[in-house]
Image (cartoon, rainbow, N blue to C red; front, top):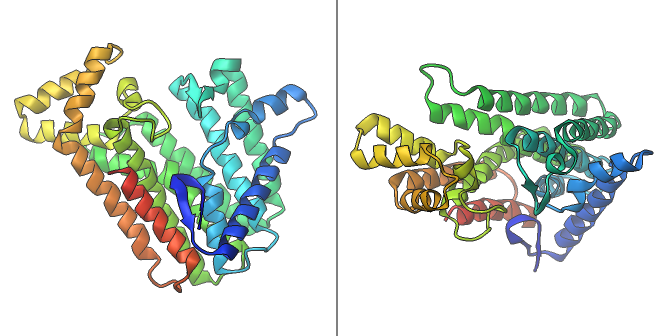
Amino acid sequence: MTVVGPFGLSVRDQALEADVQTGLAAVEAGLLDATKSDVPFITEAAQHLVLAGGKRFRPLLVMLAAQFGDPYAPGVVPSAVVVELTHLATLYHDDVMDEAAVRRGVASANSRWGNSLAVLTGDFLFARASHTLADLGPEAVRIQSEAFERLVTGQILETAGPQEGRDPIAHYLDVLSGKTGSLVAVSCRFGAMMSGADEGTVDILTQYGERLGVAFQLADDVLDIASDSHESGKTPGTDLREGVPTLPVLHLRAAAAAHGRPEDLELLALVDGDLTDDARHAEALRRLRVHPALEQARRETVRYAEEARAMLSPLPDGYAKAALEELCDAVVHRAG
């Protein structure tokens, strides 16, 4: 048994382990190749986040989904490179929008080179992803373009906020389906499709990926409040301090609006106040950790992970299916 990928996923079959490790190594080489330019500075900027590492969650899903067909099919690794390049490009843009200073333990591209160059580097990565995608055929191009539209729509919806009368929690879950679920779903879809899996299997794995992607992000929301360590890859309470809406805070708002309890209103005022003050930030975290809103967010995370697991039910039992199920368990474990 070897641990690979995010969350310490354990692969219990030597053949599957070899396929996954070989595939991920090929993806890593493909990422480095795709981010090279004749202009040395562009290479440096484009490889900045590639070299910083990361979970490679989406390429891992491509490799596991490909096990339901021919995992050695020529389109599998390039499709994994496409989804990871797309994901990396969005990180460059996200950091500009969020004014982030750090990403994956290194200075963000925008803090190092400025916003304009960070945006343009993200655009460069999108261009390289499209170049690789073009070799995979028109159907792959259509699928990726639809997913990219959903991803951008999710980002726009997040930026604009819910329309008047729209439930903020339902709006937020729609945002996550677009921003995160869409590309995770495509990762599973590409792996199955490029491997030649039947249409039913492709559809099952696509729906699994959509739900797993949302659960993955919701687990991060919970960790931002609940973690005392760096499990989420960033300092606990980062989103809270920056005023980023997350599911626990949205549940707190809903409770305060519905019931008007003094303790909820007081906590909400604290959350909406100046959390650059370390003492206020620590107090907000402490109180959110024992508030029912956090448990509600945990239950929502578990629900999406269980829905993802249930989607796999029709697939034949085997090590690949077990690994996909274990990812659902790992998401739930992260959320506590």
